[in-house]
Image (cartoon, rainbow, N blue to C red; front, side, top):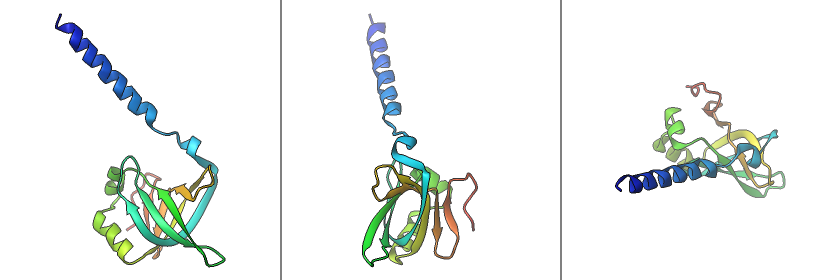
Amino acid sequence: MRTRPIILVAGIGLLLSAMTVLAHHSFSAEYDQSKVVTITGKMVNFEWVNPHSWVHLEVTNPDGTKTIWKGETPPVNVLYRNGWTKPLVEEMLKNGEIVTLRGPAAKDGSNHIFSQALTRQDGVTVLGLSGAPPEK
């Protein structure tokens, strides 16, 4: 009699864990790998969230208007392992640092990309997804 509730709880746990795996979005459904873009702008916000963080840039268009672009970054733990810290990001935001993002654009035409690289205005790439550590 005691094994039935244990089996039921274990089964529910397996179903819930499978739902989490299925909920993760498909990269190819959201981004166009054939349309890699490079955008440069002032860093105005950074969202430290899981499963992916977001960097927000204010980009000046050729006509002088401004557009906010969002760059999806790796998860917080990957950012930390690559030298990103909250004080570093806070300093970049406070200074309104100009950065360049490079990566595939969103398929839906919205102003966001998957950030494969983030380069600071001094030319140092501090976020790269090549597997290599960031430049010093």
